[in-house]
Length: 491
Image (cartoon, rainbow, N blue to C red; front, side):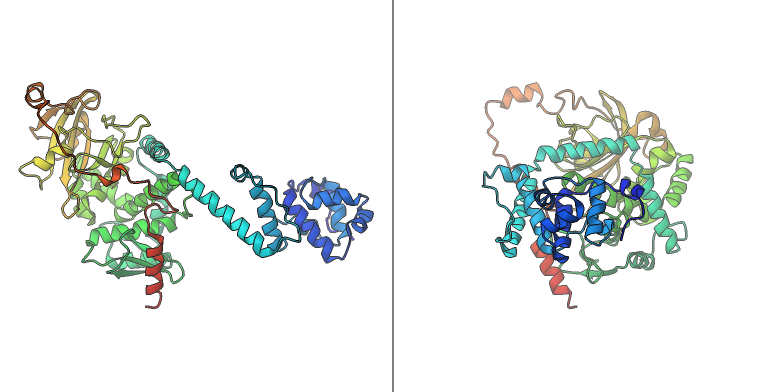
C-alpha cells in the first residue's frame, strides 16, 4: 500500500534533518520488529547503508524515502515529521549536535557515542550541562563594547525613522479602539483596567515589589504587579502598566541578547507613549498649539496627564512626522552624564568612537546642565546655544522626586524655535563641545594658579568597575522575583 499520492508530492518535500530522520527510521523499524537486514531486503539496500542512515551519517534520496515509508507501512509525512519519536531520541540528537559545536570541541574531550549502554539519566546530565555552558559563554561574550554597539545601531534606526514607528502606532490604535477610547484626553482608570483586561491581566498594586523590577507579571495567574500609588505617582504607574503590556501587545519573546533587550525596551516604551498620548488626539493638540506658535511639552503632559519625560518622548515621536520639526531629546543627571538621548536635528551630542551617546558627558554650558544652577530651576529653563553645528533652542525641565536628580531637555534648530513657547528668552551661550575643549579645561589663568597645587580625591562611582548586567533580563534579581510570585500566588 502506498502512503503518498504521487512522485510530485515527494519532490515538494524539503531535505530532512539527517539526525532526526535517522531516529524516526530506527524507531519505526523497531516498532515493526524488523532487523536492518530485513528492512534492507524490502527496499533493496544493504544493512550497513541503512545503519548509516539511522545514525545520521548520510541523507536519503526522495525515492528511498518513499520506499522506506511503504516498507514500514507508514506515511512519508510520519517518516519526515520534525518531532523526535521519543525523549531518548531527542537526547541522543542533542548530544550529537553538542559534540559538533566548536565550544564543545574546545574542551578537547573524547567523542562519546550515544549508544544503548549510556543511560537516559547520563544523557540528560550531559545535554543540560552543555546547554548551561553555552548559555554562560554567550553571557560572557556580551561585552560592554557590544552593548554600546547595539545601542548605537538602535539610535541610528530611530534617527532614520524620525523616531516614528507606524507599526506600533497601529497596534496601539487598534487596542484603544477595542475598549472604546473616546478619541481625546487622558485615559481614565477604568479604561486602564479595561486595557489590562483586554490582554487577560488584572492589575495588582503591591508595597513589596522587588527593587530590581518596575513591574512583574505572573503569567500563570494573569496578574500584573505594580508599585502602590504611594510609592509611585499615578502618571508613572500608568506608564509602567503600558510599558509592561507593550511586551505582550508587540508579541515579544525572551530577548536573545542585549541588543534585542534594548530594542524591546524602546518598543515597549513607545507603545506606552502611544497609549497614553494617542496619535490622533496628540497630533490635533500639537497642531493647534503650533498654529498659535505656542508648542509646549509641559502643556502636552498636562493635557494627557503624563510625566514631563513621557510627554517629551511622545513629542519626538510625532514632531517630525506630523509637524515637520526635527528635534532632540536628552535626559541627564547633575554631572551632565547622558542617560537617554535622541536627535534628528544634528545637535552635536558627545559620542564614543562607536557612536554611542549614553554615558557621555554634556557640555556644562548646555541648558540641560545650566538648569541645575539656575535661580528658577524648577521653572522650565529656555536658552539658545551656539555650537559648531549651528544654533539650537531648548527647553529644560528639572524633574522633582527623582534621585539622583535628572533634567529632561527637548530642543530644535534655531529656525524652528519660532513655533515654541519660550522662544523669546534672552539666554544665549556659546559651546565648542564636543569638537573643542570648551568646558573640559579650566580657564588658563585659573589653571596657572592651581595646576600644581591641587590633589582631588574623586568620589567613587560604582558603575566604573561594575560588570554589565547579565541574564535574559539584565539587572533583574530572578530569585527575588520568583520568591515574590510564590508568596503572592496564594493571595
